[in-house]
Length: 530
Image (tube, rainbow, N blue to C red):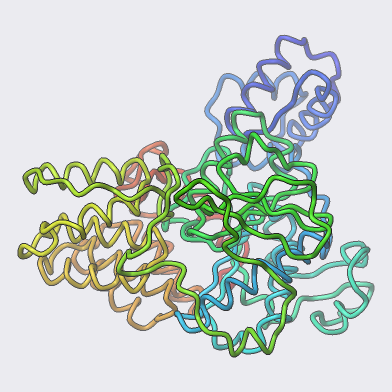
């Protein structure tokens, strides 16, 4: 089966193919690893030798089965609980307490994403961290999305069973407090931790994100560690742009210490902590200096005269203070305060941008201007453009209401988005899209019952909408209703068969039918209940 004599020209074509489809970088110095991976891929796919496998990969369509084989043999699954602990310390002692204070009296909602989660130790570490620092976590709508391209990793992660090697640098109390001993050196994560995490298949190099269709929108914290280092420079830059779009204003991105780069993360503010760096989506800039000696970095923003003025200082976590702290308004529904960052292109349900000048043109021109801003990802400017004019107040106008609802939801302003969804529906009760967006907003707000009603209304009005059936399946799955989830996933799969794999699903923000079918298959492979 082994074949280490593959011509260099074919190895070059294979490395380009993998870079394009998976983002993974295999320069000539790593072709030995690529050849070994190709041998394993050939065996898994049933080819007589690696040469036949290579010829087939380069000349035939890349099916879901082949992509899974590539992921199984070319991605790295080395991880363990509380890996790179100083990064987790920075999150627990600084970034999370500020988010918790801001949200305590404003919906008690937190969204975290472990991108490239491997076998699950990282997202479960984040879940345990939340249990430690939020004493009333049961009263919060806190979720952790965990994604990976490797379905074998995801199945192991969803099972939540680990051996001693996964605890090799973990604190001694971890297994005692958060795991059930199964014997033979195996430990199972406790249900109260497991239920915080949802696992899903996602290709960071190819698939569309952020989008509510795969729940990658409006994130407060994203961990993408030890993944970008394997990407080509172009794919890494693309992934960072998309990850930034997936964050709400004042959100945080954590990468591995070996992945930090001033050029790659130039659109973030950089926060230095002892032994760790976090990237902050903010108009504030971190004062240029060597790594700080204290535990508390100071964010610095430029005032109107161009002088640097401190905006906030992060301190050690104080659980009692968090519980009683007053809310700091990060996102004003009235948009009374605005950002000054540059607008982003692409992505969905994130926010950025400078204050927009109010157009005095005709309403149709103003709406066109707002739509153009929306397509560039400049959601704050969309809302300002429409709210600072008369166009949103001049009687029922479903296109305006729709754009406002989406733009506010993209900024994480769920209350504002819901209000405009209601106006949208009142103006056009038969538009399934209004009910669908309302359902998504309610689901993110933690109102499962009302979300369910709105999803049902959307499906009633548009029974052949695969995306709505998929969303209903996810909602039922989160509620533990496996039978209902299975029904809607099957309906979605059946409806998706009328599309070509590369067809973009309507109103999915770029998600293709083939990718959604793969996501549904991955969910079923893990078992329906999260």
